[in-house]
Image (tube, rainbow, N blue to C red):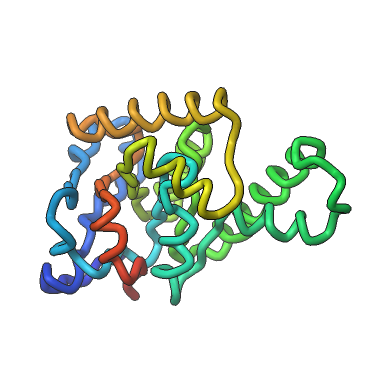
Length: 223
């Protein structure tokens, strides 16, 4: 069984699991997804998010919203796949004069290859998602269902000003066009989640503002 463990809400929260469909019932309706809104709690939100042992968790939000920072701090005893880590590894290898745009396709290929390897382990994985590649979430939803787990979304809800400040703090930004594209995609996903309308295959979503993200100390998997 792919069960989660219950924790007190002051220290942690166990995400609900959508049961896998029995063989031959692939067209049966799935239970409605669950949305947990942890915003505007002035930091009085759970310190941990725990998922089932075969679940997948996707962290998404604007560039500069703090996805990589959250994952590095909170994902300590589970696999994490962050495209930023892949980019950093490539930047250490290539000549400094070479623009990122030149080798960006190779970085993306390396990232998705690493994600594929992580998924093959069968265990829980936390994945960085830029929010504009819907096909990645569809892929992860299929993989979670195939292994008898659930896909969960962690949506970082920060203002554009906070995200731009985050880009300046890390010394790396995206173009205005790219940021606007990310902003439109993130807004659509967030508003849909607020209505309880999650992407197909997602079992739950957790909405986090900056305070809730800062309070979160662990993202992990039971079992």
